[in-house]
Length: 356
Ligand SMILES: NC(=O)C1=CN([C@@H]2O[C@H](COP(=O)(O)OP(=O)(O)OC[C@H]3O[C@@H](n4cnc5c(N)ncnc54)[C@H](O)[C@@H]3O)[C@@H](O)[C@H]2O)C=CC1
Ligand SMILES: CC(C)CC(=O)C(=O)O
Ligand SMILES: [Mg+2]
Image (cartoon, rainbow, N blue to C red; front, side):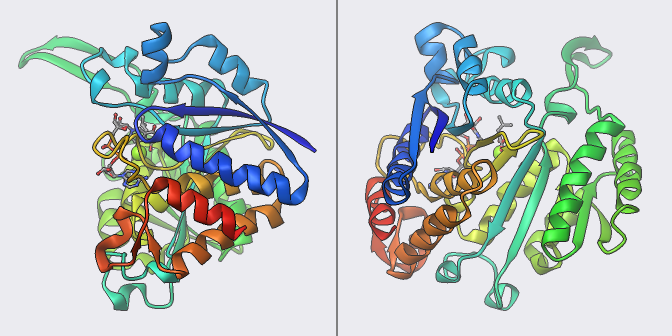
């Protein structure tokens, strides 16, 4: 079978981690006789430098014509002074919107081998941690009206948080469907004590919950949820939340895994189409030094095989290979707090490939 994958390496460590994910996919193709055809396209700073635009039309067209998209990360210091609507990050938001990727799944799981890299106390992580953040991805404040205006206090700027009932309903359904396959528990996170959009969010989530009588629903305010994530993360199984709260809480949840370099994600549209991307950014502080952990991107590629291509065994192979490399004691710099056999980005990719 031939699978067409649009590949968006992006900026900073993006191309470095993508190279390793493609190497792993090639090995899977060889082992199972699949053909993965990659079309590399530009987005972010790399696209600005080459074409003057952060998201060229060709990139959108190639992604739409593919079976799935694999993305590294965009952004970096070089482009920090550009106006907001020309920044590299706008390419990512544009792609998500153009491709209809409204559901972002971010599973944070502690590999037993990494319990020493996790900054949480041993008694908190004992018995393992495994939660998934279901983040709304194409609405909310990142996409609302924005602008500048004069106020009594002088020049000001604003961004509007706006959610329709339908946007909340469809992401809640994704979360409850997932809860039915997991532990039948959903925590909806909002700021309904202050925000009108959160009150709508809470009401619609409660309506959806009526169709899932077996699932327990809890509501938490986001400030408390941020605290609970480090105090008692075991209370969470499926978290459903808005675009901005999910962005922030999933970086926090990444520490459950030991490093943001371990956290994969799937950004899904209706149907099977998806864009697969690590949760981290372009990490300009370590770019070009063979220091980036490629496991988040490699695990994102595994999610692509499982969710979009229906290749569960192949996805299991990748996840088991990551576990094997970790249990053999190899560690990229982000995981070295308690020692281990030091490896770089390329060596991590090589070891995972050989373990498959
Ligand atoms: N999905 C995307 O394309 C995203 C892009 N960004 C952009 O990336 C740039 C840098 O943003 P930051 O806030 O610094 O977030 P970041 O996630 O790039 O980096 C935060 C910290 O985590 C470390 N880190 C990130 N990924 C790592 C990996 N794979 N292995 C080891 N360490 C890793 C970095 O070295 C840094 O210390 C900005 O331009 C930002 O807008 C940020 C988040 C997501
Ligand atoms: C451009 C940002 C919204 C990217 C980001 O931080 C994320 O999606 O996690
Ligand atoms: Mg983020």
